[in-house]
Length: 169
Image 1 (tube, rainbow, N blue to C red):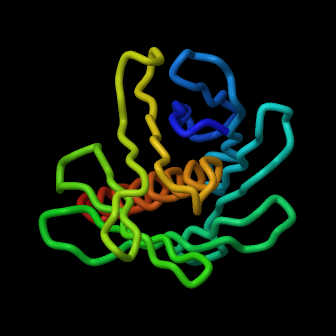
Image 2 (cartoon, helix red, strand yellow; image 1 turned 135 degrees about the vertical axis):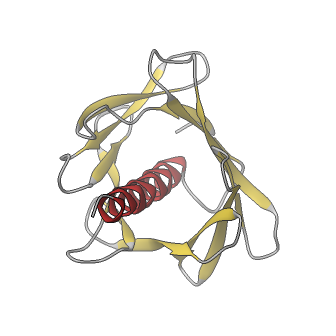
């Protein structure tokens, strides 16, 4: 898959949506399995499943797997003041995912603090807000990074949901 792609989260967080390149050519599909299970499957241009992501039962960690079930890594929240931080731990490597507190622009760094990817919510490419992902890494597939982005998105939705549930009581 190409290094710069665009994709969106659906309104109800379920269903299939296309993945596009900068020329708005379809390059794959991501399937948000259900509004209740928070799982995602990433398919390439030919419709073959490449990567999946989901929360295990009763877990706050997002597991990224190959379509055959082999685990690639784990996305989890990391403690931070005045910023948003996550970690993607895979194959003995830890990638830091960071954004300023109220920003929608994230940067992914490797252990040497080199920028390997960026993703952000953009308007105007689609009618609804979408993600733009730029992969600068030879170590991580774009499909894998899409699953990581959707994991960060799912963790943030859970945090917002639990914060909203606690505020009403």
